[in-house]
Image (tube, rainbow, N blue to C red; front, side, top):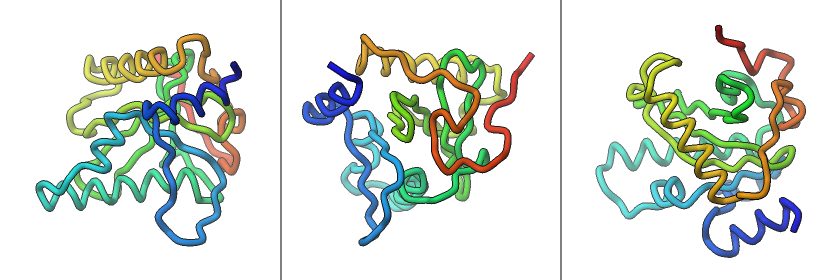
Length: 172
């Protein structure tokens, strides 16, 4: 089975869910699939009004990946180490700032595995960052045990429409 077939299989089985833009007539440029736990958060029954509003804004931020012509490193960034192939989407317009982690099975298709509040992550070398990156990789292996994600520091290998900026910074 190809990775494309695997993605379709996981979506059919309810393990990942395609993010469909809510704006009528939106041009779809890329695909995003969302793992079950994050999908459930995005579609949970109403709860705390402030959190529900924040989750609505997160969904709108995720739709940027699907519909926007340009993608910038303020929005999408490859986390260190690059060999892990874990990218973050930054939903930072509102508090709390959220980070959604994901990996690319093929160009222009992102599988979002998890999210966390930025304030809980601490510095980039913190245990919390390492844990959430490990969770993202573990979710990937659970979903696609026979396929590796694309490993690339050149954003154009994974995403069309990326601006000519730096999407990865080597840490030492």
